[in-house]
Length: 548
Image (tube, rainbow, N blue to C red; front, side, top):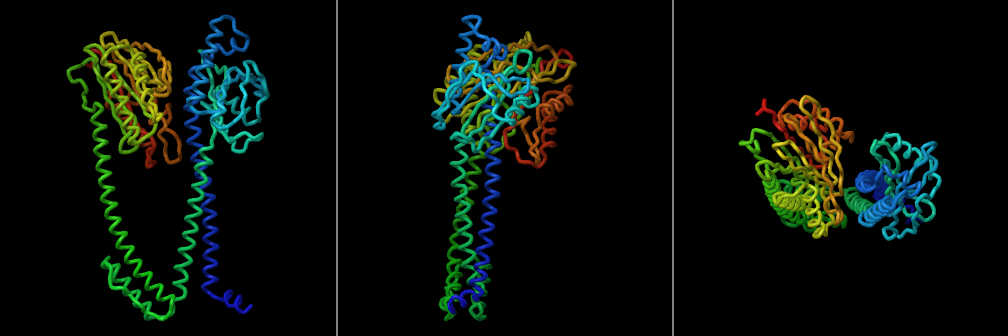
């Protein structure tokens, strides 16, 4: 009992105990904050990526034929079309590593039930046991959350909807379901494509994340305990002065001195002296390591700077681009989110009467995206110079990329070839943003085009051409998604509407002045918020006789 009382009355023991308790509480709070931040960031990233995957898959579904499928096939051609669409969706389900891809038509009376149109299952992704619904299979809506999201999509109140199911019943694994509308030729929503993707990556990443925090807190508790004990029990002045003097000397000289040796008969003070000696050795070693690390960091920075210069030199950046040509004007710029980026643009005269325009966006950022960007740019440029229409060129590039794409990267591409003498523009779109056009005397507006699958997504994809007639005085604006998705400090996006408004403020200016104006508008909106995505723009003007 006396020993217990002695321990309980010991100031060091009590203070250390309080500190340990506070540190454990602090660690628990850090774990909670880290968990919430991790889950929020993971959900945002998963939602955005799954939306783009679902949006890409929706291009295979013909919204005008949904009712025909459900009524029964009127012809053998309709039956073949349905089977082909089902095959494409099955391929997407396998290639994109998702559990389910299904298309449903919802009862718009109360959104309380739906009927299955397509249903694709990939149980190997998450060891699930889903079974495919047959065409025409009916069931009730899962809950009010799904009912509200169906209604938002059918009433054009949102571009897509997402549901996270972290603890689903019935032994189903946690997953995300992203829904995008299927529209007919009139723009009406006729069905909804749903893509279910497992989120086991969050669980796999979360465990080491929490273990790292717990381990760090335990180390911090141990360190605080040791140094607190040393500090609290110091009571002899001379050893303290010796330690203080040595510490002062080292702070001024940053050089190891003579060891303090045995400065006290008390073990705790002797340990403190030893700690100072060890600190000097470790600090000198740390300074040496830091110097070496700084030199290495400067070397890497220099190499990245060279890589950025090589990437910039791979894109045309001399303006005016074609000083001898007075019949058109072109200007472009690229602002990568990191030292090097994955966006790229290009333009080249195939011959005196044909001008190729390219705008592309590689998945990911940094050095891998930059390497993939340069390979894609070379393939597109070389193939365009060999002739052919944009759809043929993109198909060739896709096959070559898929053949050697072990990293499973992809690139969205808009490619147009303009016949300068007639103004006839033939274009093909591989999952890229729609261009914006401004007719002479009019305003900029989004030009809806046919969308194909991304380059590198899967082999065998065929692309379709769009024909656009440009007249003298018309302007064409191309961009990557980094422009409308630029965010401010409140995570608000710049959006297509703000982009179009900025374009129309400078619609009567030259291509360079238009891009400078849009760039200033984006910078003003974003403010001091960090740039998360590459931002690339290109503007082309087919000059009229007054401006030549």
